[in-house]
Image (cartoon, rainbow, N blue to C red; front, side, top):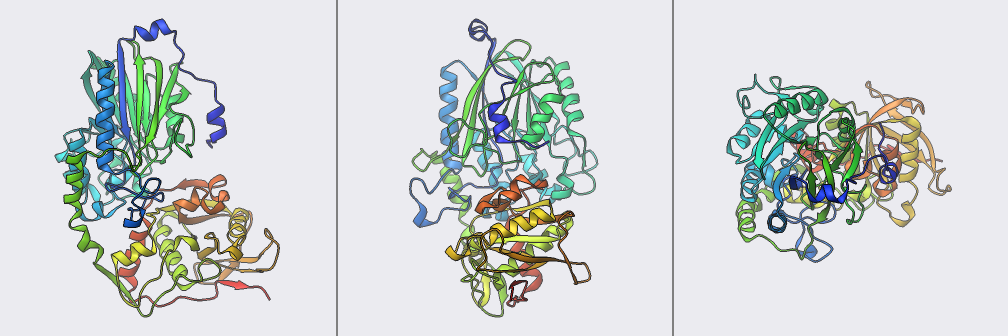
Length: 538
């Protein structure tokens, strides 16, 4: 199933249009405040999701952060309660991984912030398993909120047994509300849950947990999912008895007001029970939060759904208590940024990366390819403009690495036909004269090109590295495994072919800087790598 923004925006199959008299008499008026895919971004971030530098501390340059989130959620809670509404605060998973707060604290920073904000429940995301069950187990033991997943069977894992519930029943506003969690079934492939944690089919698990909650007198079922928007739409159609879906995993911004939103908020989808199911998601990286207002009848049917995902801007108020927590947790990170992660035999410049093959680009692409091989990657693609500095000669620190790769991009994997790979490379070669950032730095393939040829016909030949080290011509009809960064995979730098033609894409792998740190650990000292993989045709 391929979701298109046009299809979703044009869809009129499901709406929330009960008569006004029924809405006015709704027995439950519920407000859900929600986040997803925060990825340890407790400090404000720039538009790329990286921590704001001092020179970026200005309106339009810095967004979000946990102190702003806490203040916004508190204000929304007060406003909703003044309206006589029952309020829940939910998170749809992937609090872990994405900044130095997680690198150093391994979930304890997220735990302290979430407890201070006062969440009611959280779905387990795939990144919650990135450092194995012990780290997640410690987090769950300290949580003052329910940690949920109906399709995780952790009964054989001592760190997690009896700690992750399929659902929780919350008695609020005179009603019993069931919150059912779900986690992407791909977690064993993209994270590290270990051999004793099983992931069950999500639709069956959601249906079974919903029935169990109903047996306890629950009238409203909220699916709190970390499976991505496409799967949320499928679940709405397949699983009866849902009142709403609060989602995450695909980092999708659904909003009526925020710039660049993928589709409307809430997104209505015709449910398995015959009435509309509102689906919501609020972007990623602690830049947005959502407020979903639901008026429901006694059976949990939505009479009216409205709300929006809103951006946390630079000028928004900050909660002083949470700001103090974040400042304290940030103190050890100063030393972490100074930590030596490896070394180079000589300086590696980024000066040519926007126009031709560069040694630092080759090294980054090779590191990406190594990290992507378990997911089937044969080819790596990195944009030259994403390499923002060079490495010094000698010792290299974590701070140096964050200067080279400041965007907190994640590793993205996909499959792509050879003809589409050829189109992606043509795009990368289309604007080198202006020093555009899209120039392709690659691993696993080599190509020749004509800089003076017209745009769209510059690529002369492409060959792909074979397991024995030889090269074979790119087959336009064959499907190849590709690894890139999430910015390019989502169409950045005009790589729309990676967005529109991708097969089985996954955008939320490890952060690129973490991939590069591991490469330094394995290969230091790094030496310049220029092997003619990008050549001009005679």
